[in-house]
Length: 169
Image (cartoon, rainbow, N blue to C red; front, top):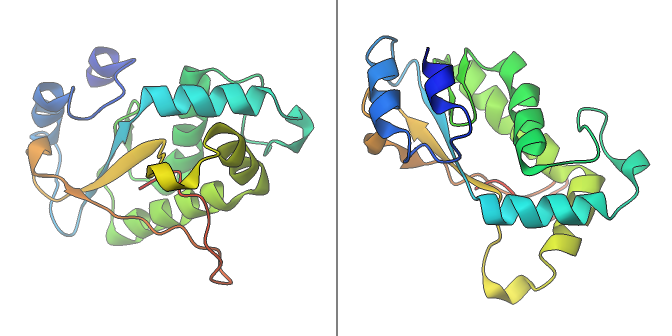
């Protein structure tokens, strides 16, 4: 029911009334946090265009090519779902245990660090000094009201400490 009402919605902010209704039916608190996405369709579109211009053989196996904005977001969410407690379309992974919430962070960091993803980011957003070019901003939710979400502030570094182009904030 909720998934149908949120199909094609890029931003959790657009979905607040439906999300609040859903969140009232599940447990969301410090021990069962939600993970929200605010996708930036213009940036995702630029990323997809750049990705389609590169060698598809270099793409990670989880990424279906050629990409569209929708297929890319679906592929990212599909890659995160196995470590999450549940999901509602493109905007919410919940409820999660603290371990699941941490696993979502780790999995996003791994996706972001993949060589293909970094090559695409370089091609899509070549000017570094114009500010961040994120694909999505992510949020922590510990309340049954989506508007109470707080930014996650994900980091963009490799395990060896090298900086990356940040795709998810």
